[in-house]
Length: 402
Image (tube, rainbow, N blue to C red; front, side):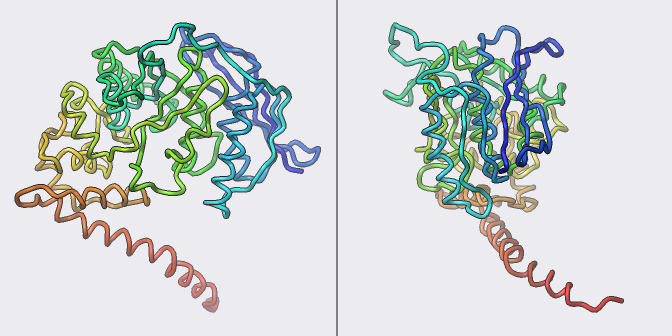
């Protein structure tokens, strides 16, 4: 029997951070195969933590176990609520991506009806929440939406936000993270919000395609701040009318990462990214400080040339809005570089299709006329990968040796 064993470890101090870690062991039958430490570093002022709480480690490792076909054995405490939700979460992935994921069993040392700090006794006009914050368009819109009450009765009082090193910013890239954190801290400070850091080696340990595991990764990280508020907000990716399936974060599955002590809410799926840009523009200070780029050559800001930078420029330009200062502040850059765009995922293609559907009065800019060729190029590449490449490989295998 192939097993993935999770052994939570006592907290320790590393480089001034408080490290909360779990040993992840692969065992085949009775034979150990490998062992890695999955760690999450938080600042000393972060909320207290119970070392027996294994919920973040289980959430983080579920997709890895399903990918490798290993049963999970958790040497810690997990709420029954989370276990029930993860069964349904696993069913989604087994159904939508059966070639990649298998159904697995989960064995836990201690199952509890509730884990973590109780909710505040006095109910607020807006219930309290924490939020993931990268500094990007989705995250900036999320905090602005709740700050202004734009979410109606769903509006939350965001008590703290969490920015993570180890996802788009490598966990060992201190200069990049410190610069990005400083910009994000200033953005949230203008709204009276606290920003906490967290760094993790999760992407080095959980070897599963990032586009399918980023939801569990975010939920696992936010678990370490659940003593602040009983609800965590994840900014939406695609809107309801353009959902990409399977995808790592969506309104279909994110709520299934909730435990008894932390409810996960997928927030803002009624808006496209262009809708978010239009509404975020009413907060110029925040709009001009967004960081959407994965490039590490411009710490704290954007390269202004990659697909995501250009797509975010387009999200503003399609409504005739100024390009944010952090993205160059000039639509001519978008017009000049649009021909360089290469789409690498179905989600990227869906975003550009949504942009093509938005029609504004007047002549179309050069960048808008490029969308159809960009999508055609993406489709041709998909056909090549799906049909021609396997045939060429087969043909090459039949070629006589020289």
